[in-house]
Length: 253
Length: 373
Image (cartoon, rainbow over the protein chains, first blue to last red):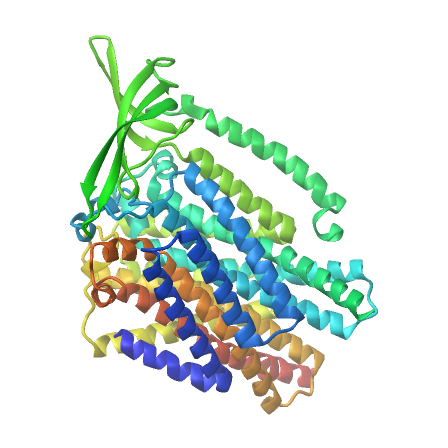
């Protein structure tokens, strides 16, 4: 079934995107390969190093390979790396405080996992924290590119505008961008955990049990921290853009 | 820089918000009197013993035994201390390591005035509240009133989901519920994100159209290939309508991504036609294709990472148990893969569908009316 869906997807991408569609497919393929290689490497290396490397590589692939080197992509690159490092620290703190990761109360009794050995010599909470950040990097890149390219248009169309006006306009533009991307993550999360919600209902979770349960915490932390990252990347990308354009002006003089 | 982060309005907001949130967090971390179960705080802990167990790749895994002093914070044993033993492994898959200051749920047994207890759970409400406060702060700081609207939309969506699942639990079939929920989600989210205007109506119409298309494609492909093994889904609780539930999951997973693309396409096309009223249809199609190519690459990547990253912990556990990658692909990942593929098909379909709907609305319907007026 998946093969048929995959074929439909590829045909659609080529029909609608044309040659750019082919580039998108190649970039996706690159991401898939890097993703699985890095999952494979997690057995051997320090997780956080792999994840940072992954983030940088994803940025390079999506930004530089697909859109070329220019002020837009460079400022997005800086913004994405900066925000994802903040997010990594934040989710590390929150994850440790709330005991994130590991099997949740439903997985403990699931048939498919019951027979697996848990002596894996790999800290699973760390894996969950890293995956939270890696899962949102795609969204961060998307938002950063949208913000920087729309403010770049503004800059080109009226160069005489002074900087504080320009920043105000950019913030206004940025506001409308990230909301819908958060929605993407939010509904993807609902789609994934619908069956889990049904389990909450089945076992008659009260509100108090729900907010203290591991399954709920893992999901809530993922969605809320990702959304915070999506919001934060907007001002950071504008900042990066302004700083780089200042620097470029200085070197030009 | 200054204008973005340190303007006066933001500064006041940050200070007031920080004070309020510190108060909330302090209150919640001391709310043990609200709980019926007994709660304790870890006041002292040390590792007293180490055990080694064999792991599947013939290496050994370290287990630690902790002796914890837990001070009981509520109930009839308030103020007393109990000793609790806890064993955790280095990989913390099923076991948990407790550190100083962790609040835990306890089951205290009182036997001949000797208190003993076992830990039954971890108290997470403070952290949940802290994360929620961070989320609201980020949104409001960046987007102001729009951020508040977005938070409100999320709350309404959660309420819709809750009601829907409530009806399902009472015995309503999931499919009609799914359709109703999808329509409500779409209207609420889109109106909250971009207000009530022409492009919102176009987006709502095209989102619903795309979802119907995706559903049809999925059903056709499903009927032509062998049935997937729904029992392998995560969190199966035993109902026999798993195929319908999975279909609902797929449609809801699609919804967000489709909305995202629909909003950006419809806003751009409204913008285009406002600026340039005499735009030819061929030029319109051309610029829509460029926009589509811009959007689809990144959106497909977002979905890929959003779906597959959450599967990684389980993949790793299985790989450590010497499962082959192709086995994992055959039995555990197909559902993630189906979700991702249907979502991506939805994204790609949204581009032409939204472009067509906006063309129809803006050129044909609104255009004609202008001529007759």
